Amino acid sequence: MEQTNLQLNKPDSQTNEWDARLHHATRATREDWVGRGISYLCIGAIILVVASMLWFITSKGIATFTQNHVSVLKFLTGTNWAPDTGHIGAAPMIVGSFAVTFAAAIVATPFAIGTAIFMTEISPNRGRKLLQPVIELLVGIPSVVYGFIGLAVVVPFMRHLVGGSGFGIISATFVLFVMVLPTITSMTVDSLRAVPRYYKEASLALGATRWQTISRVILRSATSGILTAVIFGMARAFGEALAVQMVIGNAAVMPKNLISAASTLTSQLTSGIGDTIDGTLPNNALWSLALILLLMSLFFNALVRFIAKRGQLKHER
Amino acid sequence: MNAKQRDRVATVVIDLIVAAVVGILLFLLVYILSAGLPHVSWQFLTGASDPMSGAGGIGVQLFNSFYLLVLTMLISLPISLGAGIYLAEYAKDNWRTSLIRSAIEVLSSLPSVVVGLFGFLLFVVKFKMGFSVISGAIALTFFNLPLLTRNIEESLSAVSRSQREAGLSLGLSKWKTEIGIILPVALPGIVTGVVLSAGRVFGEAAALIYTAGQSAPVTNFSDWNPMDPASPLNPLRPAETLAVHIWKINTEGMASNAAQLSAAASAILILAVLLFNLGARLLGNFLYRRVTASK
Image (cartoon, rainbow over the protein chains, first blue to last red):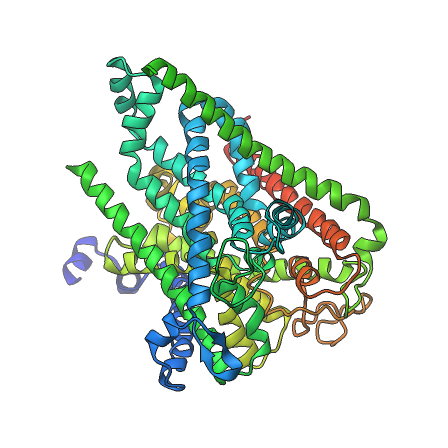
C-alpha cells in the first residue's frame, strides 16, 4: 500500500477511500449475497417440505406396528379389513391397487406406443398439429371429471354388458386407461424422438420397410425410454384416488373377479380417513395404507432411475 | 404375408389406434359439454348450494376455486422462482444438487392424496387450523411446487449463455443478471408453465378433501374484510371447491338430480381448464413476441 501511495503520489484521504473500496465488498457482491440467500432459502423450504412429509407419514404409518403391535406380515397378507373390530388385513386394497395399475398399463401401452409412432414416424406434421393438443387436453381434464364420466358412462355400460352393479376393477381400469394414456404417450414420444436419425436412415437404406424399421430399430433402441414412460403411467395409476374411488365400488374385500366391487389403497383412504379418530387403531391402519402408497411411489421413482442408468450405459458402450 | 403387406397392416393398425385416441377425447368433450351445458344458467353459476344434498348452484364453490388458486399461486410462485434460480444459476454439479433434484422428483411423483393427507395431519390436526382455505392453499402449494420449480429452471436454463456473460461483463452481480436479464427473456416459458399449472390446481380435488374441507358455508359477498368470519376472503373458513363439489355430489350427495348437477359442474370445470390451456398458449406467444421483438 505504501509503495502504491508513493508511486501514485496521492493524498492520504484518497488512499483511504481506495483502500476501503478494495477491501470491502462491492454493491454487486452484496447483492449477490442477498440473492444467494433468497434462493437458498427457497430451495431449503422445498427440501424441508419433502423431509417432513416423509417423516410425518412414516412415523404415523408405523404406529400400527409399534403401538398397536400388529405384525407387518399379518397386515400385508391379511384379507379381512374390519378396523372397528381390530381386523386390519390390507391385502384386499393392495391387490386392488396392483390389479387396476397393471391392467390400466397393459391396456394403455399399445395405444400409447401406436400414437407415439404416428406422431414421430408416420405423420409428424399432423402429430404436432392434431395429436399434441389432444394429448395436452387429455392431461388437463381433472380427475373428478374422469370419475364422473366413469360413473355416468362406463359403470352403466359394464352393468349392461356383464351384469352386476357395474362397479369394479374393470370400470376402474377403463377410467385409468384414459388417464394414464397421455402420460405414457408423451414420454414415449420424447424417447422416440431421441433415437438418432442415422439409425433410421441406415435401416431404410438397407431396404427395410417402414414397419421393419420402426419395430426392429426405433422401438428397440427406445426400449428403456418406453419402459420409463410405462412406469410413470403406472405410478400415476397407483396414486390416483378420486376417479378410482368413484367407480370401483369401495368394498374392502378380496376381489373375486373383475366385475365385483373392490377397493384400492387410495379409495380406502379417501373414504375412510375422515370417519376415524386420531390415534386409534382404525386411524393408524389407514395411515399405514398411506405409508404403502408413499413407499410404492418411492419404489417407482427408484425403478425409473435404475432403468435410466442402464439405458445410458448401453448407449455409451 | 411378406414385409410390404405387414408394413401396410401395421400402418392401418396404427391409424386405427390414433383414431381411437382422438375419438376418446372427442367423446369426452362432446359428452360433458352436451350433458352439462343445457343445465348451466346464471342462477346455477351464482346460486348457493344446499349444504345437505348439494343441490342448487355452484356460486360459492366457483369463488372458492378461484380464491384458492390465487392464494396457492401467491405462495408457490415466489418459492419456486427462488428455487428455480438456485437450480439454474447457483447449483453446482455435485452430490448435494443431485440429492435436491431427487427430492423435488419425489415430491412431484407423490400421489396427490398423500400430499393432502400430510396437509390434513400437519395443518388441520397438529396446527389446529381446521378445514380452511389456508390449509388447502398450502397443500396445493406442496403439490404445485415441484412442477413449477422444474418449469422455471428449464426456462431459465434455456436462455443462452451469452446473455449471462453480457450481464456479468457489465459488472452486474449474478443475482442482478438473473433477475434483470435472464428472467425477462425466460418469461414466456415461465408464464406458459404457470398458467398450465393453474389449470391443474383448479381441477385438483384429492389434496383438498381433507384440507380445505367439503363444506361451502354461504358467505356474505358484500363483506370483503378478510378478518370477518362471514367474509368470502376469510382464510380460516372451510372452502369446498368446484372439483371437490363434483366428487361430493357423486359419492355422498343425496340430490335427486345429482347427475345433471355434476354434468353441469363438470362442463364448467372443463371449460375453465380449456381456457387455461388456450390462455397459456396465447399469453406465452404474446410475451414471446414482445420480448424477442419477432413477428
